[in-house]
Length: 110
Image 1 (cartoon, rainbow, N blue to C red):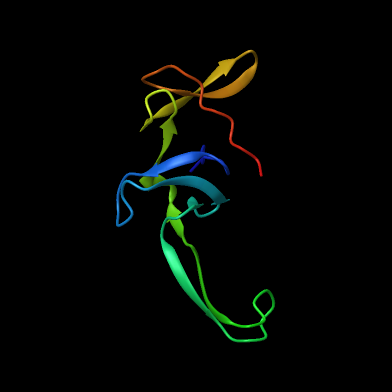
Image 2 (image 1 turned 90 degrees about the vertical axis):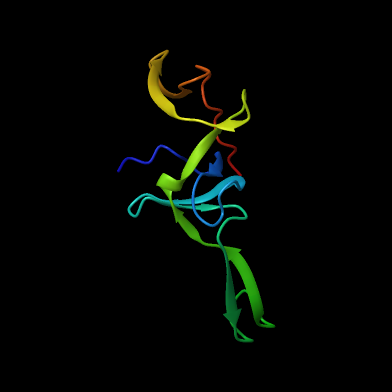
């Protein structure tokens, strides 16, 4: 499955327990077609004291992975999730929303 959603994209969950939530894509696992989205599928991780990164131990909450098929890219023009296609513009492959015809914004790298 060719994933066309990239790290930094704004997506909305369209099905499942977190339906309707929006967030930036934090990580992409292309081999398993899964995404980690900001604020979606929060999981608790219990750490013992002395582990690297959390010397005091405790409970850390972080996002889990969800399948790429349950999210849609958000169209900034209509502020709604929408389908997109890949088009050639000026010799480059560009993601373009089907309804509005607007190119998808380039993801924020950071």
